[in-house]
Length: 268
Image 1 (cartoon, rainbow, N blue to C red):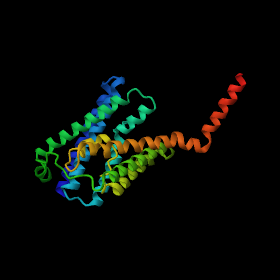
Image 2: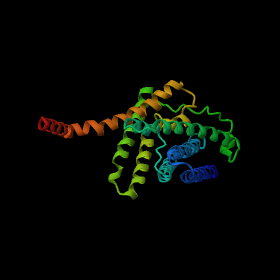
Image 3: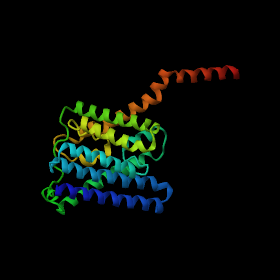
Image 4: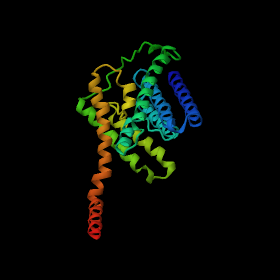
């Protein structure tokens, strides 16, 4: 129990530090670069906190029920404090698809923050703030293999989770504002419960780079297939479904085409 509270104290310190960075960025960083600063601070928070929760789950022997409760609670904290930052390169992919010029810069900030969080976690564990940290101080990121199935199964899980999250994000505006955060947290927790035993259910390329890529068991290319290509395909398939397929099936595209033909004939 002491190890649990020590890790929660570390998580709280990370959240407070990153919140201070976000507030400073909102006041001091020029508008053109503020998005990048917010993405970097929020992605660092997400990855650093997840490192600590993963340490509790894999080495600290935390009960799975407690782990899921912490996942729900931390998702509420993250969504409530991110100030609009996505912390997910898949969102940058969507922004690129929709013609945003800042998508590439945001993704680079997210990946850089993910690597910084990994290095910071390794340094923090060497300080031995708790028995758990002391035992894990020489961890050197040789963590357990996160994939417990075939590559196709793991990639399918990551694709499905990314699809579900993207679909939820697309439709969350229909909920009451007070319910959106908890609905998102409940979905993330359910996905971790359903797919965590196969791939870890990360569905975030930057987070995966921070917590999964250093683990032994598979090659870098195989991790890219599962944790980068899988979520990217899930997000893009969801976007195409809501932007192209559903409007086509509902007749909106055909109606638009008929209107275009009518305007053309009127012009003639």
